[in-house]
Image (cartoon, rainbow, N blue to C red):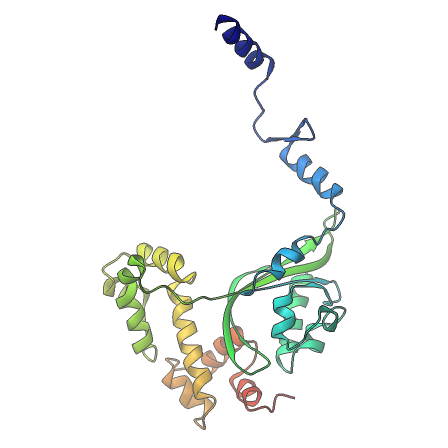
Length: 278
């Protein structure tokens, strides 16, 4: 027993503590950044994540070059573009893949990121699929840079917004605020009012919304209003009337918000859902 204890003590003494910020890599202690570079240099295919994203039916994934052409796409994007094979998208720009005017809007968005503008982080978007069904998602796009810091492309994901589980105990805490949004979206809504309805502080209701819906309360208000507007645009009401019905006293403010969310103006959306989008 004593010999075993001595042996154990010797082993412990011979194994120096690992320095903070280092990783054991090929039996060598490397700083974290060096380990990342070493592993990256040893991977044959830098787009190994493509196969992983192929297995996610609720996530669109893509990589584009500096000309905004698709270099890597996952199968979810292929299917949502009404195609069967990735080759139908590779080498083409969004303007060549999506119907007008959506394709031009996505292209302009890409060009802004590639020009060195701010990356897009969790932008709430309403996408119109080939069957003309709308779908909500949160989109992220970020520029890709080489070793010298030059932008060489971009990558992005669009993640579907899933329906919240109404049986979740946390949902019941904000249900009154959610109902208020759904019933009164045509009226001015303030965050403080939503918090009072849920008997919470403003900080608490924001945390609960993000945890349950992956949206802020403001994003849910926008989602509800734009969703209602997209339904009304299938009818004959004027854009000004729809703006008023959806809580926008200013027609131009409604148009700006609708375009920021869908990528097109209300009139262009109406034409697209009617099959006149060219």
